[in-house]
Image (cartoon, rainbow, N blue to C red):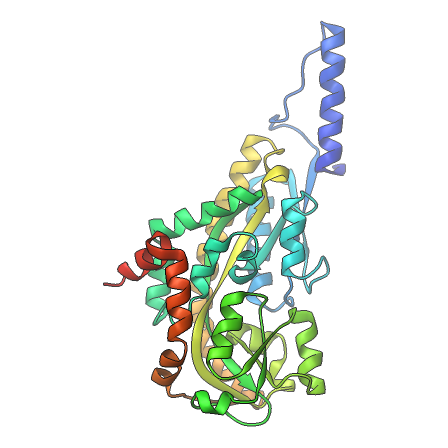
Length: 340
């Protein structure tokens, strides 16, 4: 039976052997890249969603690829349902080397890498085709590298779908219908400004608190994509889904630079190749599932309605201008140029 140990234990063991080799003269030094090693290195991966959510499906596909390609030398332990913390806490843990991997939506990353906020600019993408065009572009590759400055490797973007507003009391058809509503958003300045300009009062709140807040009436609604609305049981506490489609949600698969770079180079390569393949596959899955999820949400009793989208686009024009100027030609203008 293979002995299962953690990364730090492996490194301590290797260091001791190297010291002994240096003292003994005749002893052979031990390489961390020994492909015949029978030791199993465990990596911990966290995310905030349920086991039925695309967050978890991405994690499982990544796990399967890594464990198969490493011939069992790597084991990925997945911790769903925010067991290891909310997304900001997961990001902080990776920067400090206290967590190996995580599936994260791009919005909380803005608190660590402001450039990621470009993806939260309202109505940046008009449809799935534009989102996929971005993900496959050199601009996306450049943006992925921005997290290296804070000690995080970002392996790929996963298009998740358009975020829309859900409410408990009445449907939303135009910005006037948002007046007086308290809407939960991600902890992001762009989201706060967007929902406030749409006419509601935005309340930043971890997802773990949102369900109870909706259930108790502390907030009137939230905004999210089909996958979160369905898998996080939003129809149990919300009646209406209004297709504002104001922001396109994007996930990422990330790793702690300090932890991953401690691994042998061949295992680092396996992690990167597996992550890229898994993110590409999950993006395709999310697009294929969009209509199915919408139908399931309706079957759960939510009423889905179209909105006067032009009026919402006009309402958030100041937010668009503010953040497009903030990111300038570096990202916003380059992304928009992809669609010209």
